[in-house]
Image 1 (cartoon, one colour):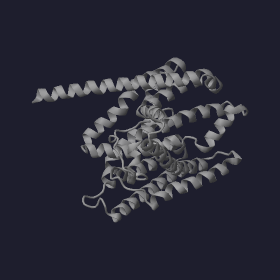
Image 2 (cartoon, helix red, strand yellow):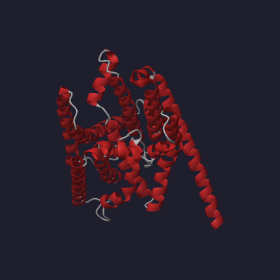
Image 3 (cartoon, helix red, strand yellow):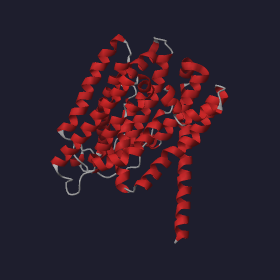
Image 4 (cartoon, helix red, strand yellow):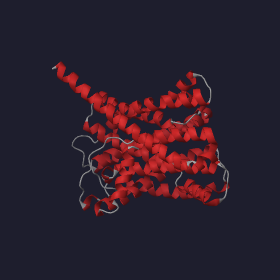
Length: 381
């Protein structure tokens, strides 16, 4: 998971409250909440996997999975689409955009995922080196449904298509204040999202194996499209309109229906499809709720230390995603679900330590490559 380079925090007048720009003002806090939500979800998931249906831990895990589950991923995906809008407005050169974004995610991934897969596949599982390479380059994701680091595969794909989305959702010059322009772009976004779901549904019916292996990524594409559309509204500091509220309200209603529907505890391919759709809409609702809470806290100056901690976590969201997935995977392989639950403290400490190590290394490499680039530029002159 990853937070993108957006704008600097800007002072906001009271009239801007409840405007979409609040997503930019508290973006790091939102990324922080998203990654913490995913972090806790994986702990809850491991508790449920122990099959010990008793005690406070199980009750907490069951309630968390029922009400929140993996919705933090939805927040990440939407916020990534929003953040890329700011990044592209800052420098719309496609080549430079790809360099920045791919460097931001590919370098940390290769530096840490390569030794991770060698350790897991070659040392622990005693498999061939070629299997580690297949895991590294996501061949096993598509072929076998091995989802360990699926988000990297997904977000790289979204980076590749984003310039096209930017051109589609950018306001035409001179029509930034036009209501017709906003309605036009909303209609385009709606058609694209519906079409995307139709395509995924066809894949599900025609090639269920491919769908089962990749639905975790495929059903997040509409969320990214929504984030790309929303990014322009955030960038232009548009107020939240009545049509904007419809989606999160529907999401809250559908989430309640899905919660009641889960009472029979059955899981099938149809429910997975519907569950991802509901998670998308429910995620929009949670995004608005958390954005308003943090924006109110920011303006009132309350809980400063807590907000700073969450903000720092948000700045390290990509690294924390990679680190906690890797640490969790190794612990589960060695000790199983019950062993993982007993080692939650170690899991947490190692995940955060590794994440900040990744962040330091990335910052160091970015500084070095930036210096080398400047030296080459000067020498060419």
